[in-house]
Length: 253
Image 1 (cartoon, one colour):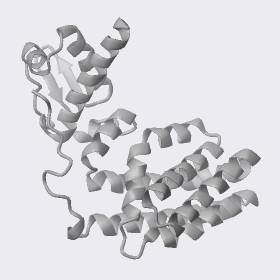
Image 2 (cartoon, helix red, strand yellow):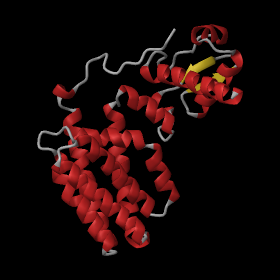
Image 3 (cartoon, rainbow, N blue to C red):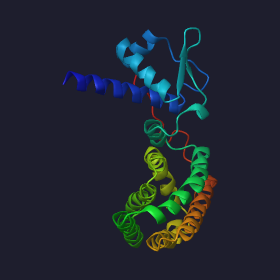
Image 4 (cartoon, rainbow, N blue to C red):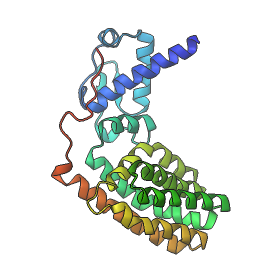
């Protein structure tokens, strides 16, 4: 019980400081307050705070040194493959540049994973992809964006899993929150980009079923191109810019 309480205190403190950095309360280049002041503000012991600082260093958000103190690092140094970092960013909304970078990464990695899946996928994995596709199709029919996003994420994670490349799969899991945000954006396009891209999801399944690696690769490339276009269109439309205080998370004092 005591270990559980300590773990909860550590996790809660990590969330408080991590979110404060992500939100810009402590912008890149700034220093965190002195240790004792920070302990008093958050209401934790020095032992807990020091463990949290170690975790934030490991996530690339801060660096420490005897002469520089605790310094917040530039955003490009943050570990965007860390599930907690992505989760914190997701909770306040993503910077358009990050989502653009994600789409570029997907365009390079996912078609290759799909090519491998066409060769390596088991019958069970192919059926799981077909099931996820049917869920997406049903969600479109019922006009349920939430269900569509759930099944779409299952579909794309299933593609990475079917590649039997553990690095691809771990990347997809780590970027889960960011992928869901990108999928959400595609549901906001005026012409419902999800309806246009649905046939390409089916085509990917069919190509994998046929063990056509080149066909699967081409279908995946085109589907991601449509997603890139939708994300770009939504993010560059001024009507979709969130208010400055949208999802702004404040630290408890």
